[in-house]
Length: 507
Image 1: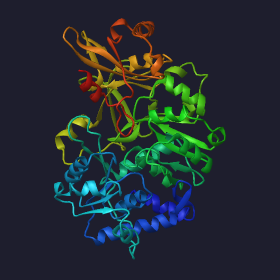
Image 2 (image 1 turned 90 degrees about the horizontal axis):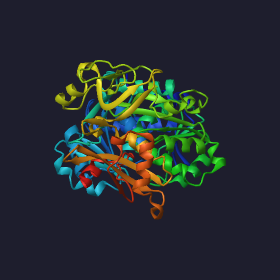
Image 3 (image 1 turned 30 degrees about the horizontal axis):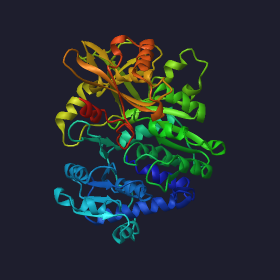
Image 4 (image 1 turned 90 degrees about the vertical axis):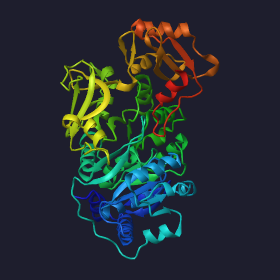
């Protein structure tokens, strides 16, 4: 089973429908996209690449992304999409580690990456997508039928963000990607050929993964003209495309809701799926007030792509439910075809309300890390993916995430979950953003430190005011010992706050 059949089937059914658009201009129909995909596949095989070979994608969100990605799969190759904001040396490391033989490069990265090509012994060629060489590939005179591959064969090497040490390449098989696609339909949304998906987040990560269910249903893939998140551009495109959906990190959702809201364009919004970082209750309530019940939350990891739990639109809209507030603060219920447990240090399931590590199994879970059997065995111990996240189940099956286990603060022998403190501090109207970290303390082992961003730098709340707020809602020992005001919080390209940078800065 080859995941490329998703596109081929759609091209047969919806051949004349728009497939790829740049801003408000449709570039390709589904029939044309499938044709270019077959030509890319044939050109890659003509260059000597064989099924199982790896091909890198070092590029931002461009219309060519779709034909390259599906062209790799059509030829039976393994795609290695990479975050476009990586340093050239990081691109080189991933290309070398994956053993990529070819890499497609965005024009903004071609020169920088060429200087590091000597660090990639297997890499035969860098191909810039604006060069004549690429045009010859996309317009190759012959097409290639879809390669037969085993469903368990890797299709996508998803390199993790590498918060500790070098990034690891999660092997996502054709079966994994199909399971993710079907779970999207079962739990989140069922877009159709009249709809569209806007790619604001990197195609190398969440937006690219959720491109698959939208292609399977014939929705148009829309690339914005800007190379950064621009709320005004989003409102413009919402006016252009009825039934528009997109994936957003919480920080993007917050910026959209604090921009000038276009009520007429808002009627065209279908679904915003948010995830990738904590969504705090105060921000979520504000987003629901602005956008209405068009939000869905997902919790997942690259190792179980975008698919562990979900909080669907109906749960966001069910304001009459007795546990509505608690459900909004959760990450939802286990996804279709996915088993989720909370376990202790010995791997034994815990009762509802008890906090432990979240573990997952199902057809969506990776087979392991590329060329790393030790890390694979550790992550998949006992047949379950060990997420490293700390959570607990409520009695109704909704999962509450506490924090990453590495972010847990232990002060005076007591466990403190940063997210709990962050939720309280965000209740203050003067606090725009907050990240709570643990810093070494000679007496207590660690002390709680809050790094904050003010809504108005001229009206920064005082420490005593924040102390009082904390003491109204959480135990005294959880109250921050320091409040540090910053102009902004450091984030990676997917919107996650880089707590390791904060710890390094203030330890």
